[in-house]
Structure formats: C-alpha cells, structure tokens
Length: 247
Image 1 (cartoon, rainbow, N blue to C red):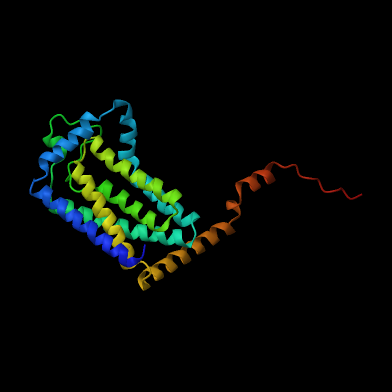
Image 2 (image 1 turned 135 degrees about the vertical axis):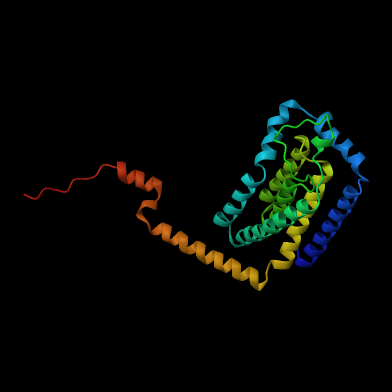
C-alpha cells in the first residue's frame, strides 16, 4: 500500500470512529448496543470457552505485541525492522490518544448498566469507550499487514479480532467500544505509516537504533561467557587428551 492510499484509508477510519462516537455520545445506538452486548455476552456464552476468552482478554495485548516487535527487529530483515519501528511509533500515538479520550469522555462499563451481564474478569473503573485493547491489537495488526508476510500478518489480524471479541464476551465492553477502538487504532496506524515512514526523522531514528543495536550485539558476542551453549557444553564435557610426557 502506498502512502497516499494509506492516508486516505486512515482518514476514512477516523471518520468512522467519529460517527460511532456521535452515536454513542447521543445514545442513539444504546438500545442496539445493549442488545448486541447481551447476544455476545449471554446468548452466545459457552462456559467451556471461558478460559480461551479470558486468556485472550488478559494476555492478548502487551504479552503478545511486545514480543512481536522484539522478534520482528531481532530476527527480521530490513523491512521487518522498519515495520517494528513503525509499530512502536503507532503504539505510542494510540496509547496517548486512547488515554486522552478516556479522560475527556466517560462511558459506564456494560456491567454497570446491564444487571444480567456475565463478568469473567476484574471490573475496571475507567471509561468503557473506546476499547484500549482493540486500539492496540488492530493498530499492530494493521502495521503487520503493511510490512510482514501474510503467513505472519494474517494470524496476527485474527488474533486482534479474537481479543476484541473477547472484551465483549467477558463483559467489559459494548460492541461499539471495540468497533470504535479497532477503527481508531487502525486509522492511527495507517496515518503513522503515511506521515512518518520514509521521512528524514524516520530514517535517522532507524539508523540510530540499528547502530546502537549492532554495537550492543557486537559487545555481547565478544564476551567469552556468551558463546554458543552447545559448543560450551561440548568443550566442558569432552574428554581432553593428555599431553605426552617427555622422557
């Protein structure tokens, strides 16, 4: 995707978020939102799947996406490294925007208004709108689609969908919270790519981080204690030949 297309798609997603926010703020969508919440949280509730959705909701954000950034940089080529840097920039912007929105607008959690809600996790006290989990995971998945191969990016996209669905399933968000979060997170990710990628700032940041990483890696490899464990184990246990005794 070129930067112009990414910019247009990002702006369109921000417009979608604004529309959802208007519907939520004016409570036009509240009745339908509650009905959709009850459908996912109650009617489609399957007790045997509770551990799956609890795990996805608890660990599907930072516990997955921090390693994604790390391994993309350490094990990936140049394109993957640039994707990791773009992902970090997008995450920083997403967190800042998400926290600002939650501070400016408070929406009660569904378990505070729906007495029959099934709540499987600890009850947060902050605003329900938008879903911070959906913002992060869909923002990361969007960057992954731009930079990673499909065999990696598609599973990450599916993981983002699972985490977002789980937030409704465990009783912590309305459906519009996660849809709005997904739109906002993806929109910010696309605009991060469109605005920063390929700029002088981005290239200098990438070069600086790569230089620091290469220096640190070089220093680590120079240390005797950080040799290959297999080689060290072999040398430690292999029988040593005795030097011949001179007559």
